[in-house]
Length: 186
Length: 351
Image (cartoon, rainbow over all chains, first blue to last red; front, side, top):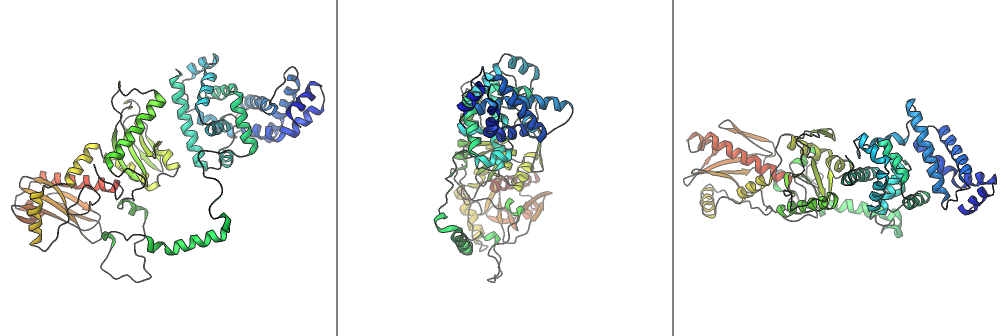
């Protein structure tokens, strides 16, 4: 079923909306949540929470790309859950690894927090992504937005894991240089 | 903080996420400039491809050039023996790799690396070459299968030392500058180059050894080595040739354009010209003269040409024609040329 048709079901408050969402994006969202959370059960709960949020948001929202809209919800819920889990020293998955990798890009906690609060960091990241060729942008987002594993990215890109790691390393360094140029302390 | 960065990615432009989402849904995306998936042998099937490969392997020994004379022995080799000795990892330290797609002159290669480095920093960091010192190669570690290990000057922070372990080798840095590996216009950190397969573990070990012992080459080293290879002057060369001829010993002088394996001159000290020539016996030989060691990867001879006659360097020292300090200087030049020759592909000209 097309995204627009599923969204229409939400607007009509039809209970089949969630079933159709599950059919269209269930596995996709669960895989994404699993990348961030270690537990299969947590991932499924996270996706269920996302469906509930979707139900509450539509209407009034009318997303044109339901998959993207849903994946943002899943990601946010998973990250929040991950933060809570981390306090209890649970979990692993791709999130801590990706986090560790990105830590090379920025160093100063306080300054970055201030800048982030102003939305400046988001703007700079988008500008940085805009400077990248499409393939590298996809690779970066697969790793740091979708939290895909190195192995999965290598498979999707038809390249070696070493190549993925090297490209990510260079992208992190370029991001660091870009942020520095934009006045963000590194 | 990094968590903030991950969270900040929430604000990524939807268009970028949509293209990424599409790539993930398709399960593949075209990365880089990969060749098409099809191969020339596909119309013939993989069996034919394997047959072609096996034919190539069988024909390979006949296609390869023979190794230089340093590997040959006077014994007759049977048909079952390989023409060349098996190459171990350590052997690669004595046999420079063949030139790949690099400039034919070392000076051109270094100039190209400097130009690429400058272009990168102009583009990435807004580096202004008119307001800053030039970005030059400050250390040259060698060419490894087309990848060139260098230290670039210009951005060092003295208060930051980035010691690291790459391929089990510890690299000690005195400041924030690190060894860069250039290949085809792209710079890589040493660990990147190793992980990406540009360098072998043995290459990294050599680089670490040279770096940690300050035996990498500077531009001045390269200039001095080049000067040695084209010395002595023509008149002195003729005199030396005549002296060798009286011993039925032909002389082939090295030059800065590919032939570095002749009779080398290690300098003229007063009236004595110190000469070196590699021998044929393949063992590592060390000679100690005036307490100074000369080591080479095969047998070798050392001479002092003095007043129309040839002496062994030991005799020249014993006769008082050359001092201990001058012998030490000759040994330093021997070391310099060895370092240079190990690090440059065969076929590349010196400046």
